[in-house]
Picture 1: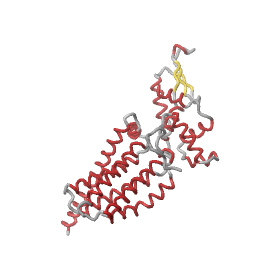
Picture 2: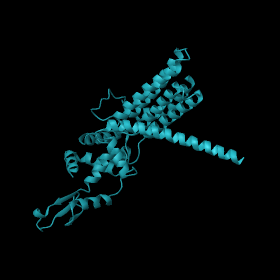
Picture 3: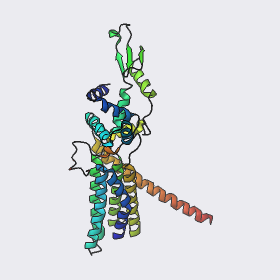
Picture 4: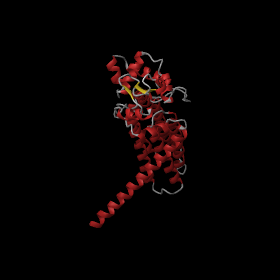
Length: 154
Length: 177
């Protein structure tokens, strides 16, 4: 599925730009997890010529991305990373169903994955914004004393 | 009431400038707006907010604003035994209102909090407040994990229902043709 991966990266670019401008921890880690997963999937698919292994590789990468999104959702003070993690869970379930033969059509799987990517992008862009009377940029950083290994902020 | 007292104690050591920022947050202003109003940088505003947040155990900004609003409507009750008039006296903490009543303190507190102005455009419904408390509460890890699964199931259910509705619509249109 290299086509879908590249499409997702292209779709994420506006979100990446916004997140880099906002410079907040939850948004930065989320963005890093999603983009790294897409790039890793594309690289693994390019290196692996065995067509039978491809769905498993993408599923493994999406599982790792889901784990990273859950980690962010648990560390964050905000609630939008929960939606991103939920979208990641849907992607993992979709892979599981496809590997189990319950989703026969490749197009249906790709459509589902693209839909989850859109949901992630939307949640990230909306969630990382400031809202009048609501959470500000600073609240998108992890709480002091959390197990965060370091800040992406400069 | 104990919670409020603890929070008031936690905020006791704040400087005038930090209180000023807190007051503007409770009015629903963003960091940018506060920075503009006080003619300071946005990072200075965020720094002050961070100090307040750390004093309150890392609470999110919205909850800090709620606490500040609640503090401004805290009712101090002087029991009848300590009152010169022999009746219990209830005073609002900001000193704007002083009233003498025999009513229970809790009732007056409730009435005052209901009269308070809603905070900005952020949802402050009981459901949202309870949900926030649950997701940021002591068992936040479990609550957030459950929330992830519930949201995922909700999205999937919505997708399935949408597809079913679409299919029904297509069949209906085909029947008309």
